[in-house]
Length: 104
Image 1 (cartoon, rainbow, N blue to C red):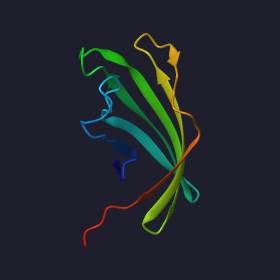
Image 2 (cartoon, rainbow, N blue to C red; image 1 turned 45 degrees about the horizontal axis):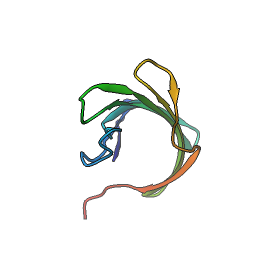
Image 3 (tube, helix red, strand yellow; image 1 turned 60 degrees about the vertical axis):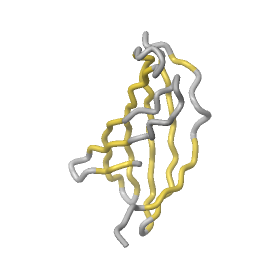
Image 4 (cartoon, one colour; image 1 turned 90 degrees about the vertical axis):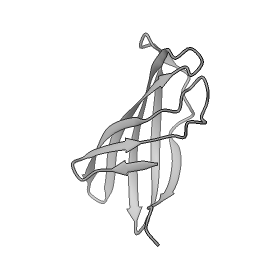
C-alpha cells in the first residue's frame, strides 16, 4: 500500500506476515510531479524478525504514470547490509501496476 501526501511525502507499508529475515517493514519517501509522471524515492528499514537486529536499508526509486484510477510504474531497487555494503537486490527495473483505493 502506498500513500502519496499532497506535501510531496509518501508512505509505504507491507503486511506483518512478510519475509521473516527481510522484515517487510514500512517505508517513507518523497515524490515530485514531472510533467505527466511522478518520480520519487523511498527507503525501507530492514530488520531480522528473529534477532530483532537492523539488517540494512532498501532504497527504491520509481517513476509512475497515472491514468484515471490506475497506475503503471517502473521501480529500481538497491539493497544494503547493516554496514552499508551493497547486497543482492531484486531484479530491476521492475514493472508495477496498481489502482487507487476508493469508497464504493
